Length: 366
Image (cartoon, rainbow, N blue to C red; front, side, top):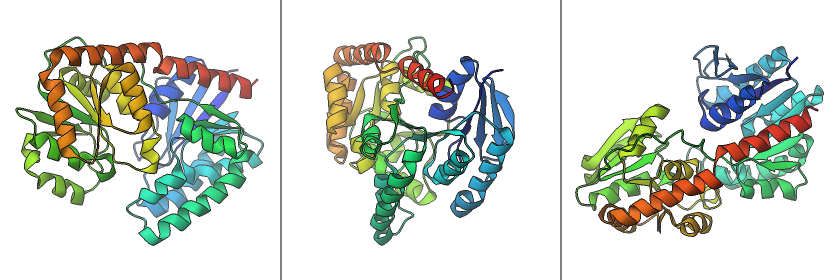
């Protein structure tokens, strides 16, 4: 009988790229009996061989943290898997309960949550630092009880290594060729794919595109809230924006195919400077030159592989100059795009990370 494994998330969508498209689908392909428990109100289904169970969409953040996590735990017990793999810090309590029942448990840490708390706009500023400190202490004592911490970046892994956890880095690199399609005529389009939030520098992108001649900015992803949307729409540069909203992966591939540059100019924040944003590598996989924030880690990736231009993400003028350079220097842009794609094929791809995931599971379930 195939080993049964369950991935648990109270926050992420059932179609989440890391959780579903990469990890769950890879495990299903390896003949594990894979379940995914989510909370989105879309019902149960089977996709890519993965059994998806829905405990219902919570009404608000408080209900999600209190009620939804209990519902996910109940469903997890009903499934009776051999191994549980959870993805949200608010699910740590669920993970501990499963460990207490003698189960194998993995915590997949997508981010440095303690640092991320410092940037949460919904938390009053005077509460953020105490909350971050408390979580660090909590993390220190409880996470050593899990069988493995899967870290999305080496920087996250270093946090857990220091407190004595068993840690494996599984980078969120792209699936080779997923976003590559037949060559089409490039246009003077700069694109940003992902959630549109202030800390991701989207306002600066709208200001920058205003300064670029004969240019269009494609935004693909949800806008964080109505107030921020109104702020963006009030800017002169918004007249040069095509707001696509949430789009499917095949539509993302089409946008990348006709764009001339991919943008990932996150503003400085603890969870950004040491991150490895998935979209950076997705742009590279599609053969797009990138304009990215000049964080040391990002500069190392981009400059070592000569696949884009690094800029001050807080300066729309600097961003505009980089976009203009790529638009106006097609030969260099072509070289950058080709270099990025080769780098993904050789080292920044999910195939390599998939092997690490399968090895981890085989070891834990031997």
